[in-house]
Image (cartoon, rainbow, N blue to C red):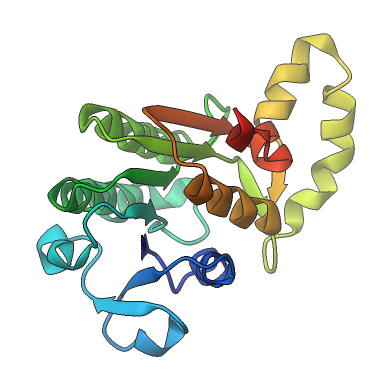
Length: 215
């Protein structure tokens, strides 16, 4: 059993379809009016910012995947990160503890990094909350996910190629590397298939390779 927040979003719809393809039973948290966007899933209507609106509907012992967040993050959205990203992860952890979930999956962000400090700070706080809750969890840290409507960083690929060949910049270039939407969906589904005992952090290189699920 998988409980999925953000199930009707950019990544969530694709992940739900992949999990269903792999034979998982998926329960999707959706807002009123979005019920039809979670095809094939069991639907729970609730507010991702309010654990009380849905926590009793989380299957006990399930894997909980949290994908709620501000669309198209930018430095101008610092207040939204706190109001949505941080509040939703607090609610998700509350609901996960209530349901005694077996595994929690969270999409964070690569850090440290030279930009997007407010976004990184909120996602780091989300990671800290997961650890404080003593949840067995997989935390994925992509930097930028390439996909439909999100292609502009492709122009930076030559720069990444160059920086990965310089010892002083190699580690940072790999950690802040670009991953594709397909790679992210595959990594998230692999995390479900291979749950962690304790907290496992998956950086961009492992998201690309998928090797983390073999360790």
